[in-house]
Image (cartoon, rainbow, N blue to C red; front, side, top):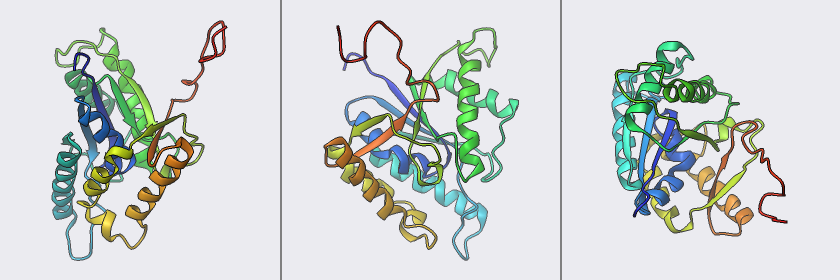
Length: 237
């Protein structure tokens, strides 16, 4: 491959990005691109009965590493606490520094509206970090300025106002995606939400809309799908 890209998924908890765009990640990894999952927290406070928060944190990180290995991706989990992610200068600077260090071409992250505050805060951090990482006037541990684009991913908790702009055919890797999801205890055992069934069904529905067997979707940032020019995009004069 002559034009290898770096796709990074920045999410709130271990398991979020794997659920939302795990098949897209597997598709791009299979094609030879670099894929990295960056989790701000482990999502440790949804701990099972008789498992401590700290032990579940370790479990979630291990599960994520196993899932990412199946997807062909790298995995990084930071030490922020579940349900306590804040949009502040410390966090924005930390993420901007990491993004300069890893140099992703494209970041996938949560949609801006969510019933979970961590989910709605992460895209705000990603957008603010985009500016800070991209402007050379900020000195971030000596790393050179790096600008990245970002898109939003689809998640059952983040659906207010989410209308997909991009459908990606993931039919050839959907079995790999489901295998990766099976590594998460909460995906397979949650009594609150049938994660595995939902995301398998969602992939089927989006595939129907995409005229493919399975698909996952993405959304441009607000206003990002505006196209300016002399003609209708894709319909030349």
